[in-house]
Amino acid sequence: MAAKTIILVQVTDRLKNVPAVQAALTEHGRNIKTRLGLHDVGEKACSGAGIIIVETIGSAKEIEAFFGKLKKIKGLKVKKVTF
Image (cartoon, rainbow, N blue to C red; front, side, top):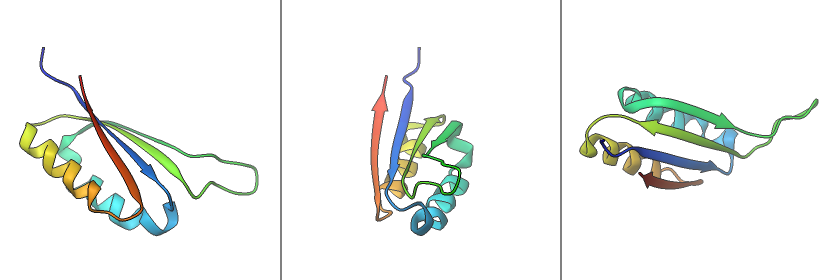
């Protein structure tokens, strides 16, 4: 069985970081099998922070490039888990 790589992203300021994060996700869209975004939502407001969980596909080189792109974005905490 091939290794599975999950990228975990904690976004501390969603409004400020959205353009750069979305650009990285779009650029590496071919390497995203599953994407799940989580943030607190209330009746009157949404949280400024959030978490993105990405199940990746592709070569190790492509996944590393995607991971590296996310790590360069200020205001994110990015981790990679390989099973």
